[in-house]
Image 1: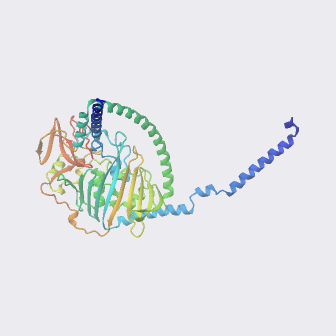
Image 2 (image 1 turned 120 degrees about the horizontal axis):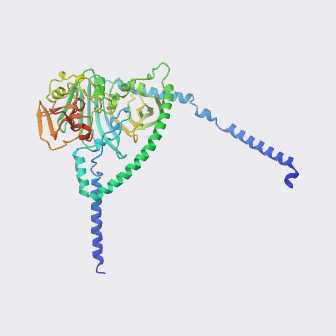
Image 3 (image 1 turned 180 degrees about the vertical axis):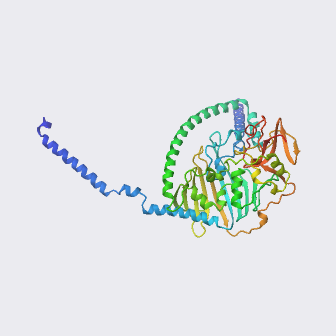
Length: 234
Length: 285
């Protein structure tokens, strides 16, 4: 009889500790803060076309250096190794399950896409009224996908360093012809929202650089906003 | 014994039964609607399809030929994470356009990030007011040229960019492979036509206002070939076809202390054996 209140108190404390741990886990998973989730993807483009074969939510973007992701990672580490291992096991199982499911659905989708393609071709023949011009066979991919934001740029010119210096120093915009500033032949990689390390800024030719180890970074405007990008040493 | 006594009677009964069954089947077939007639695209279906195309193209022509307008857009989009989980993000945008050279898009993302895109017929500028940082590039030639360059060459993001250009009718005509009239409905109290179209890579739905101003009220894009088939959903509101236009809305004047940087697409890629962009970066967009 005398021990009953202490048992109750013990149980309440244990439950409280358990709930605290659960809450930590919830925050560690980013549910509360929303950190660690990729914001980029095909649908973000709001385009009437989509580049073929582009993967969603790249692994690189999950390894973001952004502040929220870094905090998220710290929280996870604080929560404890046990929980981490548990999540890893769960993740591995879930990954295997998803891979199996993905393979099945991939095959199914390919079959559906072939059927849909045939169906669309038939529909297209009926959609375009007499006298109108249907899409020509072998029409340019770029022409129908210019708005997806991911189509490879045409390589024109190689005065890249000069171009970046010109932009950063605020030179007359008339001196920066667009045709000489686009230097990448593929969609540019996504950058990090914050510096990958606590580097001191170095200004060279009006451009601010940050050195982390042997890699130099500078800020640039990308599709997701201002990011830090690795560049050749100034 | 009984079964072998009157085989002819048994045979007659079977024949009669079969005749009755056949008669019933014929009668039922005669009273049932002709299935082929119901499924074959008849005059009504053809008219509906033609009407869908007409409604779509009227919208496209109307928007492409509207000299000035402003509109608010609330959009949401799915991002399929590496784990397979689908996460929705969103943004609010205010678009002001004055053809042929004035464009202003003010965007506020769901995480609070703000971006301003301006074009004045000469320069394309993107500005982050929080960081006081901007990037700018020269692209004369008008809104169409600038928007296409912005997306195709600079790889920047401008959702529903096609709707901003005068190419909208030809782009829709060229890309649409199938189109259907779904239903007549209402969007926020406005009577609207609901259309469903298909391009090679995107299934789209568009709700177009009835009446003399066939403006888009809602757009849903489904990326059908992508993992998880993510969607982009946009709701248009506050269409104003006679907004107060001031040229200063389109020309960028750097605030004091604003830092000018390059576009990512303009950066030279590291050629050393150091970290590649994919290894070192990957920030959120």
